[in-house]
Length: 376
Image 1: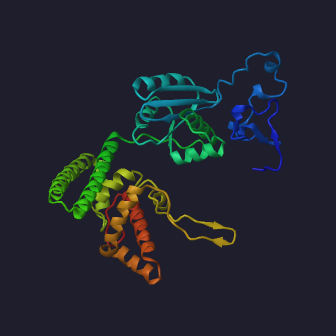
Image 2: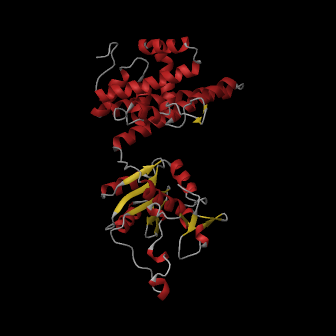
Image 3: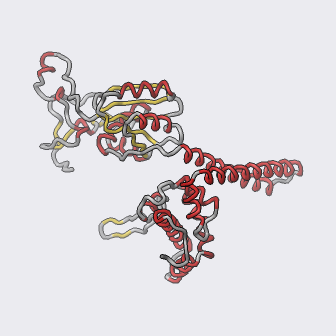
């Protein structure tokens, strides 16, 4: 964007609501001779000499066919809705009655996208309900939404401001539609997450018992460890039963388990935490898992590549699988040895094996075949 010459939008001075920490928000300015993106253009009521302004009448209504973008900030109890470009705001309970009001507000409008943040399980009901009503819903990364608001000059953070920022993000970027995942997968993910939490709790109890001196405390911790172990076994049985009852999940699990080094726990985490397996390119699936090397180049300097972002539970499971595959998977063991011979550091070698594992699982699921020592 050429910033050599900046003109204030004709017809008005920047108002207080355009100012953030003493500066004017981006939509108060525009580059000379350019209209800019849709969300930054001046409306008819802002143009110099507007008849409605001159006579004190209400601004004319926008074209009924103008594209509409809705932003919804989701929390456990409330839904804050902002409709762009009309500026309509709505705050309702995050329940069936509230969602009914949201649907009524958006009914009949040419809604292009409804944008909301991923908030664990609190956004799922809204996503499913609006998707079932025929609306295009995009669920975005909260970090991306926050960075967009900051780039747009929305430095303050409230639920209403966040809803407005999501609507403007939808208008400016038009994020891709996110289809609701099957309820069976959501339920299975909840069980897998519960198992991970129980495993972490068991590890903490074992460490506490090791450091304990009191005989009474050791006995108490021993009973808690046994109870936690029973809980994990029951979760494992329920996870296995849920996967076996779903033909698609059972097919994917059988393919992933055929890879030497991948066990049932890793397979369950990948099935629930990386449901895109088989539907992405190698680079995409590595990026989703947080195993893609990120470039850090500028000018003549070439920085060291490193991994960043992605889904941590998937990456953690891949770490344990890579430790085993580096020894017992013939292809990956040979791959690891080649990297070591080139002088690569042990952690770099391990991350490379992790990336190979994820890409291999993605390829096998896409081709609907099990692993074999000799590729077909």
